[in-house]
Image (tube, rainbow, N blue to C red; front, top):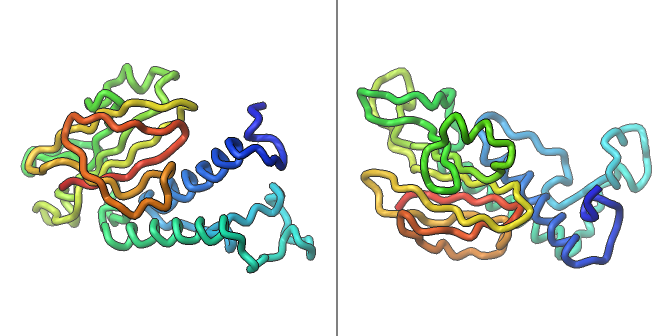
Length: 216
């Protein structure tokens, strides 16, 4: 078992990775389609000491401790950021299923899967068990309702890196737009700046991290 998966530790690198993984899980949940469900305390890092069935234990394992340390406040701020993005961008909570099919009339795919080279995923990519970094390009111009017309939502790129090491991810080009703006990087959760990137630029995606970018 990898060291970061074992019990309490004072190792700063292991704790930093654990905290990033918590943000990754929150990001995966709150930036996904459908209805997100959180257990009270998830937003500030309540763990129940790993016990996932503590409903019958009336002790500190199941209690909510509202005396938050800075780590808990930081995670709450990050969770608030994610819920704000979900509210701001309807593309993250559509009522229609994403199909990945090309709409010839509108000239758009609602979702396109992107590999680390910035190209659309091919069958061989999906069959490559070693490929653990890819992107999900959600096009807000896709049809929103049963009426065949373009949507007016933002175009978003969600990048997930399951590798332990950094991956150089080439940001794909999207017609009719001017580049990308970073909204979230789980490796720098307190960075409120929204830096801009050009098409074809490579982004150093930290090992085991998640990104969200929108088109300019």
